[in-house]
Image 1 (cartoon, rainbow, N blue to C red):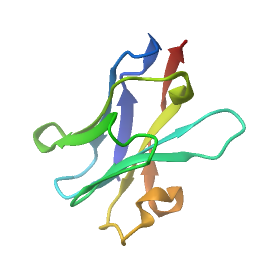
Image 2 (cartoon, helix red, strand yellow):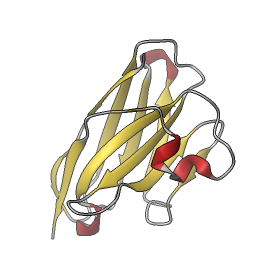
Image 3 (cartoon, helix red, strand yellow):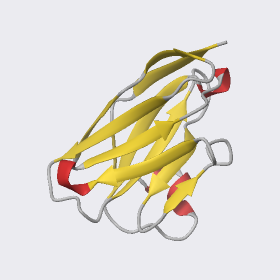
Length: 124
């Protein structure tokens, strides 16, 4: 069973950058698919970015965030630049063991395993 641990969150000012990490363990994950989501209190989990054969981004993340992975470290990263107060949320990574069906990477329901989340707070 795959286990995910997020790290790298924190409190930053508007315009700053953060790099979130999602460390995967439990099996060989060279061909894994991972998504990043975020959630604020009282809202549904929102898609941010995903990586499979390609990379996929929400409109809010396009041009500011970059998702990447290091197979040797079994880790997926989310580089977030030019952060805004609206980016404040708990960020979760999620693992999907099978390839994405086109367009489904935005749905939390297609992922098999989730991490515990890491808080990102952007002050104005």
